[in-house]
Length: 618
Image 1 (cartoon, one colour):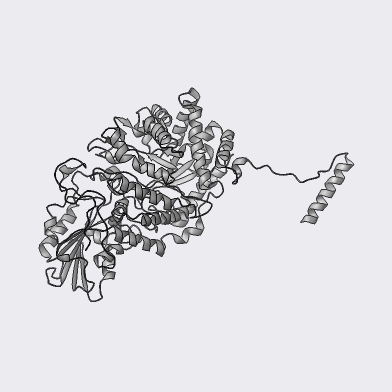
Image 2 (spheres, rainbow, N blue to C red):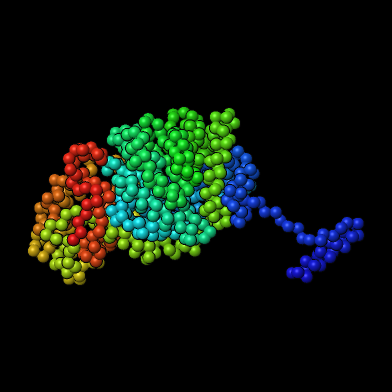
């Protein structure tokens, strides 16, 4: 090769000499733009690319679009900064790891083909694992992790989630939820770790450390998104104006001191743990949408708390600020929203924001600030060096190690609330077990919302182990196990060698569609309980639910009562504790009300059924 180069240069020199020219003495050196240099400081790279960008390219970076609402060609044409999968946003071809990786990579290739080649950031709600992906491990929802209250365990879950997401190119996780629920009727209660800010802060910081560990997959760094800023867990019943919601997206009551004392501390902890993106809340305070509050978004979050990352809107949340979409956009961007989650119509948002800048309604300085923040995060994530799915990690999706971690988390999350005559743990060689309830044999119910679909769905919608299968595997071969979903048994559940286990639960739900005025089980599960209460000599009730339910009148009829929360894909973890392979160690992360009139917290209407922190240890 060197000989050929020498010959070519000799010929060029001879030609130039014949023409009276001068031969080059050195080879030409290509100039690399500073923003392309991984050795340059992030601030230098950001300023270099920013000064090269047109207004259209800047506004494109501020635009986050749901993947079904645009094509890769539009990513290139509109200079889109981010693409997301909403709940159920799996590939149209098939819901497999390989299809996810190719879907994300197709959008990424389009972004890289633009003039400046700025990569997109692809996001999804991995709120209990990579939960939109079929085959991913589904960890317990946060309320269960709050009951376990083990920061080391939560950090390990964050790391496992990051690995499974990075394998498919989803380097941006819209988690953790750092809400501090004050009314368990809220349909997002299970997304919060606990009702106390210090409890939430500790676990949220642990999850972020695990998720954002820079050693997970070099050079990429997965990032989290603490949400929803600020006060989403403190909304008042009946204050929501969205669909038929009652609490979700409603009005947070109380003065500023309440927000600062109850709802702000987890964000301080998350920022200290390295949060680079924070999602604003749909909710309002004193009649103003949080997405419109320059005080909370800019003065407090970016100023007082020193947050240097970017603020992203929630799904179409800017639209709720004002019926006039143009006024809504101007208000939100000026208030401090840096990237707008526009589910369906990127062109509309881009056109309006462009006009706003041209008219002076939004300053170019504000645009530059938003884009600086977004670019800095992308550089810190290593996207400019390696923007594609880390497919070498695909084998770790749903791995045995991740499933064992989830099983451990399930066992740690169970809370024993009643245990007459030390019925639990049960002996594995018990003569007869009678098991009833739909939740005993339904993966979708035991995982809840935000699982494969936004609202979740009953049935075998992902691979895993049901609670029933876990029990069947735990007991001795001589134990006779009879399962009937409806609690109708052919054997004798009143026999001396028999124990009944009713595994009953809420049907899956998410967000405001899960706001509940009754906190009661579905009627079918209630009928199962009545049958088993009447027929069984010894009855264990295992409740699969995203929050406490009102069970005050029923509790005296049960010999043992266990809160299993929403355990996810590894139901064997429930059996591990019921049969003594692992100890009960969970404690209530939320107060269990005796009646509805004790809600929200602090209502002062008598003693709760079980206080925060309660949990029996046999």
